[in-house]
Length: 295
Ligand code: FES
Image (cartoon, rainbow, N blue to C red; front, top):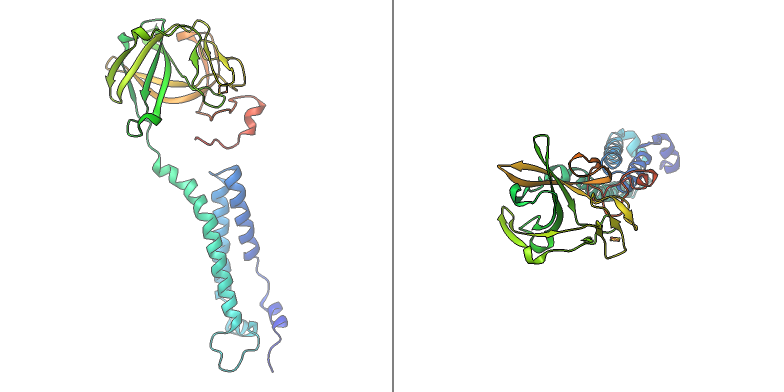
């Protein structure tokens, strides 16, 4: 007599693996939105473990169980339909899981290998920066990328603090949505000069931003330390780290600033890792940005 398939499925016993697998996929999807570094990889781990358990569970069925799961088959059918469906389901599930998991794994893991060190940008000899005055330095941050990588920084030589030269170097990029801010004061184009450095030609133009810096797009205003004084920008102007090598001013990585207390070489800078356009650096609003798109 042919076995009753329903009865036999109950005998084979339920397995949690498919449910855990589905939970793993859900965790991956949540991780893609919320946290690529921890939650998404955890979801991948859960999914992979569940998939392995699922496959092994199905593979370890006793011959009696396997046989009992098969509905009555025609005499002479060498590959029962139930097994075909089971394997097709597993195969499709695996493909879907791979399609979901691989991009997450790539996004979580590849940056660790593809990280390239920020190029140090030589702005020229420190003696070429007059003390207490601002210049606008324009340079290619990535000469291979060309003009698209052109950046501008407001550079002020603060003189020496103790025995160390001090510079204030602010990005001209508005922290609202990235328009180029301009000095609120004259720009002495007749005094502009070009310097050849490791990133090609750098243009340096003296300026006198007595009124700070302003953004032409939506009206944000910043004082001469980069503090936001008006408009929709959520924080102060970003700044560049710098170092002095062989008497030359070298730009380092860029970082974000919530505000600056004091001025020039003795200012207290409230610094943060580089944030995206429109992201507040501090306060409750900063909690609304759990993912940093540019880190
Ligand atoms: S981009 Fe500067 S105020 Fe909007």
